[in-house]
Length: 58
Image (cartoon, rainbow, N blue to C red; front, side, top):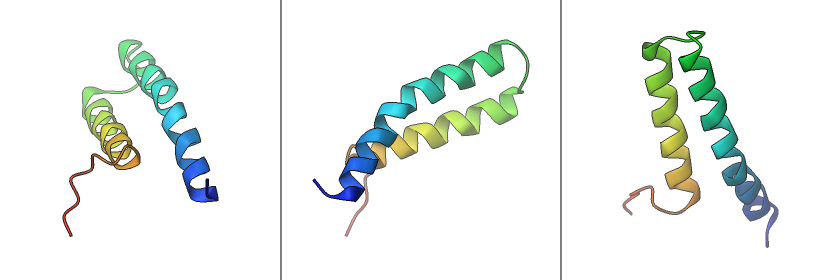
């Protein structure tokens, strides 16, 4: 496993915790929907790239 693959696995493992923290901030009204939604999308996009489902075309 390369260093990049190893880092990707760690990053992928961290995403659920980031989603949980983001949800908590939103539910506690510490961030607005306008902030919450784009961050959710970014986490989903990052996950799709890390799992190879990013839809990138050659």
